[in-house]
View 1 (cartoon, rainbow, N blue to C red):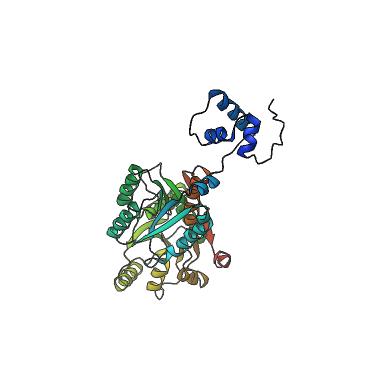
View 2 (tube, rainbow, N blue to C red):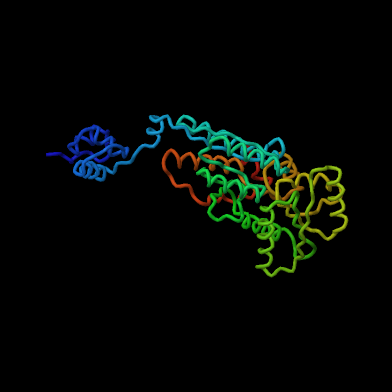
Length: 351
């Protein structure tokens, strides 16, 4: 008679399970790995024991035994072209070090965030590198959607961070609620200004995610039935001289501007261009770039909204790794908190 009165928290080996079920170790191995033939009686006995001991497979041990290597590609803007992405690169590096011992390889594919052809080239390189998963920043929406479709056709798992593909609801996304972050910015400006003058929404190098923030900003004041005039402006930042002329003209042509919401990390560039013209404008921007922090500490920027690019990238790699190694389900949407940074607390967010 087979005894089943064992300690429940014991880590059971194949030998233990075989003894409990009254079968051979080979039979247990075939059941666990679903290979070879097993009689219906033996299968029933093994499955009964597995249920009683609440057997959980160890995918890491299995991967190591099988020498399984998972390849993850990360398609993101180059920090050489935009320093905002430097913390994201560090997040990827940290996650890679953590999961590398378990058979995970992470390759980064950098593209120029101001060049569609660069995105197309690097996405094609990623697709041709035999990936199991692709984590990407889809700045160029149409091209990113095509990349997503190609990944699906090749059975490559896809996740996005920082930016989402707006036309896809099923794509995994890790980042902030962009609409809600726009509402947070509006709330901050509302608390520091009256209902007179102009509140400007400023897009520097317009992207889809900026529009989502603008919509959030506008709905905040719409919900309050505010009489504040809200105007949207867009400026290009590629040529510094041309940008300075355009920024100066914007301020001189709109003397009633009382506040500005810069919808990306480039607030410092606008301030640098106009700081000798106006020093009384309430300013809310994004991201902890050194230049932004400097203007925050000196009062030219009132608040910064922190998007945590390092955390976003780390979680992106981590969720994919845990899916492969532990069989965990990747959350369809992982929204990070919207942190408001002030001169008083910025030191606690700096690495």
